[in-house]
Amino acid sequence: MTMDAAMSRATSGTVDSPLIPLPEHIAELLSDVGSPLRLVAHLRAVHDVAHQLVAWLEKHRPTLIFDREAVLFGAATHDIGKAVHLGELSGPGSAHEEAGQALLLGRGVNPEHARFAATHASWTRQDVGLEDLLVSLADKIWKNKRVPDLEDLIGGPPVRGHWPSDVGGVHRPRRDPLSHRRPGRRTTGVSGILPDPQLKAGDTP
Image (tube, rainbow, N blue to C red; front, side, top):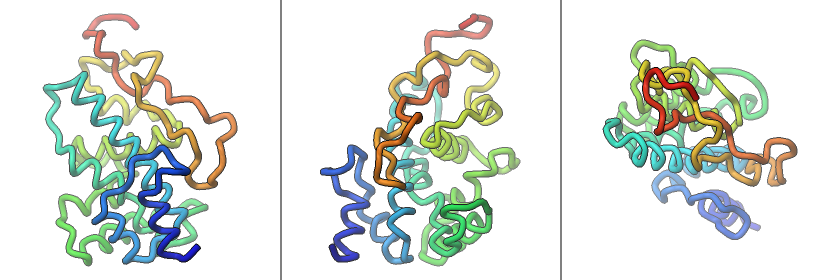
């Protein structure tokens, strides 16, 4: 398989993956910066989760105002800096965050969309908005990881502490796109990530 064919399969193939294809302009961007297939697979998975997340919010929180397209772009590009800092694909590190933002800005991406590369792991910063928090949450959902502080920032005081026993349809992808195998114990959907639309302030779950 040629590299071009492998990249096309990673960004938009549907035979081996149930994930939503990445938008063409993002797929081209990832290819242009030399993103490894491992990175592309991860970004596609988080983008897929973000689609589910915003759909859930639009249905259950229709008064919540956020930029849907910005969230999806951020989810699909948040780790793009790892195309430069390859060691952070499999190990710890934050150098990819500022590098990713600079990479996107250098490619002509507007600052409002490029910022997610720098903010996706820094949701306690004073300058982050709801869109940044949703990108961070999509990444955590994919990792099957609970971060109560992040969840509370999105839920806000009216629903703080009232989380459902099921995610309401937002699930981690069934296949692990980084290893191209079925994950072991992390095959179920994430539990308790979104506030229960039936609960009001003062209710008990």
